[in-house]
Image (cartoon, rainbow, N blue to C red; front, side, top):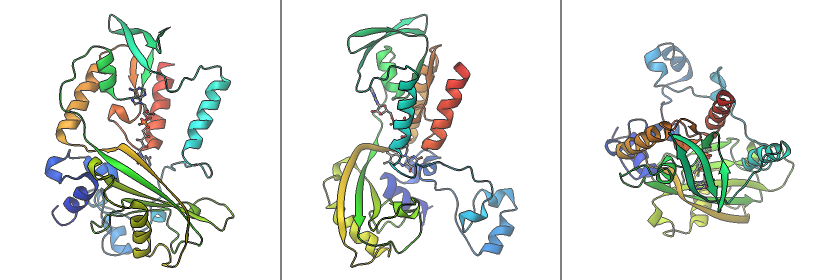
Length: 298
Ligand SMILES: Cc1cc2nc3c(=O)[nH]c(=O)nc-3n(C[C@H](O)[C@H](O)[C@H](O)COP(=O)(O)OP(=O)(O)OC[C@H]3O[C@@H](n4cnc5c(N)ncnc54)[C@H](O)[C@@H]3O)c2cc1C
């Protein structure tokens, strides 16, 4: 714990394991070690006990992979655009930047929303924002402390030459590096180009957002890791900050979320979907769950 997990958890969350929920490591897909060599791993993984602790050396060795889909062009936002145009074509009124001012409740059923001053009758509600927000609208007492988040700084870089690796992405556990994850787009997008794009993500406490020149750190660390040549030229860069990026899953925050989820579920026609429900994080699983929920309620 002190040698591996705590330094990594401290780097990603600002806390060590004793202050975190017992599953907090899963948010970073941190559950197995690659050990020894390929034949020994193969043998050890036949035991259920070791299988859950030991990782394959290469993803090709795992035969039961459920593919996670990522658009080859346009980034993850392409899914949202496609879903939105399908909804619009089906005659659905899609409103963005709308503000729900209040909810009407009869016998633990939501029967009305007031959105930007307009009352809308409701038969059922699929809710994907924070359960605390719903609780506040519904007049439920939520108490507790505000959840803590790590801010995410995303540095987009465009280089003039190929990367020195064919990895799709790299998670950087080493506490001596600031980078959390590096995604190398040209390694999984089939595009003919002489420009090579990467995103370097940093997870920091909100008060550290302005503490460093993140573009320089991103380039320096990519070079130091040998992902690109020291004489590669950065043709373009951009930076984006998400203040409430990754949740810090402390025991207290998980307990508060559970209580809020219970309060939302006590409403007969409200269904929680998305990460706010606390039962998932990765987009692939959340979209599948949302589809299943929508199919069940018809
Ligand atoms: C930096 C970062 C990197 C990630 N990388 C990956 C990855 O590589 N792979 C992966 O699978 N997952 C990744 N995730 C996780 C994944 O993006 C999220 O779990 C997923 O987007 C959750 O979708 P959602 O719709 O449940 O919530 P969100 O995407 O958070 O959407 C909730 C929406 O509700 C809106 N909202 C909130 N409050 C209100 C309100 N009061 N009124 C109106 N609207 C409101 C928000 O503006 C937002 O649009 C990453 C997350 C972050 C932050």
